Image 1 (cartoon, protein in one colour):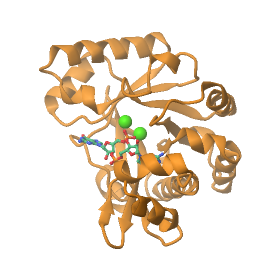
Image 2 (image 1 turned 60 degrees about the horizontal axis):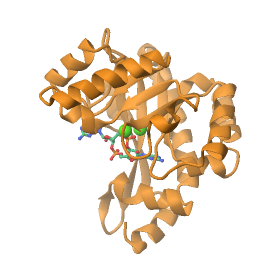
Image 3 (image 1 turned 180 degrees about the horizontal axis):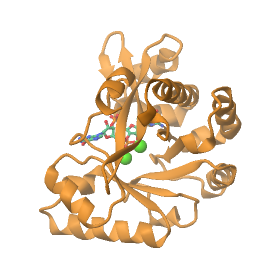
Length: 254
Ligand code: C2E
Ligand code: CA
Ligand code: CA
């Protein structure tokens, strides 16, 4: 991201340029809708829609993601509350938000989430937190925060498993309940042998560690079949739905 974009992002929230889209997550076994991942969108006045990959990494580093990161939690909970009012099918749904490690090191993230949940008479299980890695984490400091969130009853997922810093080095040391397999592995299914081996092993590893597995980026029926065959618990991807606005989500998924 250019320096200018970085500077602009600091004002994106207060200028009302951020919005949230939701992508459904399904249980593989019966394709029941179980939750939705909230993803941030930025509508820049000059550049139009800017993708998260172009503003998240730097905003995570310079601390400008902290306020938008808290904002998206409130957006996600607000939306879930509306869905629950609108449809019986939404009663058991959760919303998942992405969390950068820096958000955990500033302020009191758990207390902020609790306040947002309490205002809506929601419980911690209604909110899943996906930890994304763009830099190596300070295992001691972030780990302590994650352990506290886990003890408090928040459900934690390790995102993009198998890529970058999201790795075996700490998956067993941190209290994750869910593992999300990165799209780069799913993309090569089912033709590339190595991708089949890796995915099969990741599902086995997660289950042996007592975790549930979500595959992201499922785009084809053949990928879907393979993932079902190896026992992947949950699925997410364009095959089912791209991320959509809250209203479209109600019309399509609920
Ligand atoms: P992610 O958490 O791995 O989110 C999944 C990304 O894959 C999303 O991209 C989604 O639109 C895309 N996707 C979903 N299904 C498919 C598919 O079948 N095919 C393909 N090609 N793509 C698919 P998006 O929305 O551009 O977000 C990119 C990344 O930005 C996210 O990756 C996440 O790491 C980060 N991000 C998004 N919103 C937030 C946020 O509110 N806070 C933080 N900290 N990070 C965020
Ligand atoms: Ca995610
Ligand atoms: Ca991911």
